[in-house]
Amino acid sequence: MITLDEFTIQQLRNYPQATGELSGLLRGIGLAAKMVSKQVNMAAIADIIGEQGETNVQGEAVQKLDALANQTFIKVLRNSIYCAGVVSEENDDIIVFDDAKNNHSKYVVLMDPLDGSGNIDASMPIGTIFSVYRRVSPLGSPCTMEDFLQKGDNQFAAGYVLYGSSTIFVYGTKRHSVNGFTLDNSLGEFYLSHPKMTIPAAGKTFSFDYKYYHCVDEPVRKFLDACNYSDNGKDGRFSCRNAGCMVADMHRIFLHGGIFLYPARKDKPYGKLRLMYECNPMAFLTELCGGNATDGMQRIMDIAPDHIHERSPVFIGSKKIMEELTLQHLI
Ligand code: AHG
Ligand code: MN
Ligand code: MN
Image 1: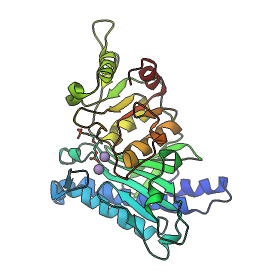
Image 2: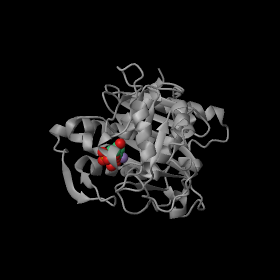
Image 3: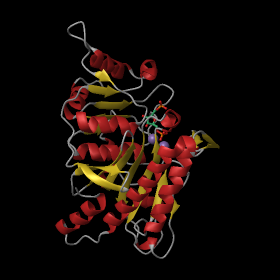
Image 4: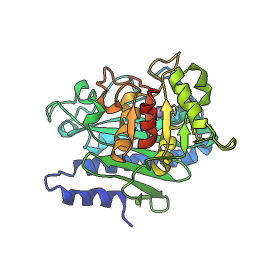
């Protein structure tokens, strides 16, 4: 049994030049995740269900738990001294931790503090997604917009936390594999439970909200029809599984294979999901695990971002299903 902290510290042994900053940063994210996990479990009795009464930069109603998770992550990261600044789905602009210690941190973090907010009141799964970059501005100065507006390919680490039937912390780094840790609530520690994760090349599920079937492009509809196709008059090829929370849907795909789609729609030509803190981190983990991620035209992590809150269509998952999608020129 090895804890998240022990695991990240042990990784340092493999890289003599490592400073331990990433371990410190991940420890901070793990701590914030434990705090949010507790808030999620208490939500219905701690008056943190429902809307906050504000609209965020995405034009979406902010839930109380969105705001609380956001404050929790920002506060912990600011205190951790391993992060120079943050971009969050819930804040219009970049947040610069402009103080003597944080200005010397080499990492910046982009995050969706609470993914799947629509699930909160029904006690359905929700999550957190994060992406870590090495800053490009000089150490010792406050971080800048340039540090955040990097291609997904430059991510140094990424991960997610799933607040589901158990709380699971999954992260991967450029240098290392993807590993998952399960929270032991009694000890308040994440323990390694899913070592060296890989995505099965094939899979049995696709994740799509059929509400949008009629407003996606024809080729995507054809692909969906192919997913439902039955050659025996009984079962379709795949089961449709859509939790309404990308983290939960992707976690299932990491374990069992499959594909997640949030395509462009007539009313939303760039889809809904945000490139920098939803698509990129999931694409990074997916590729590390042997899968693929595209916006239909190009690899997600090749997209040069224009702004921190931009959206992107996304098709992501098991290698063989993604190949099928591409081979058939469906996207
Ligand atoms: P968020 O709660 O951070 O805004 O993200 C929710 C995302 C994603 O997790 C989910 O798959 C998708 O939105 C659901 O989209 P619809 O609102 O179109 O159902
Ligand atoms: Mn989200
Ligand atoms: Mn969110």
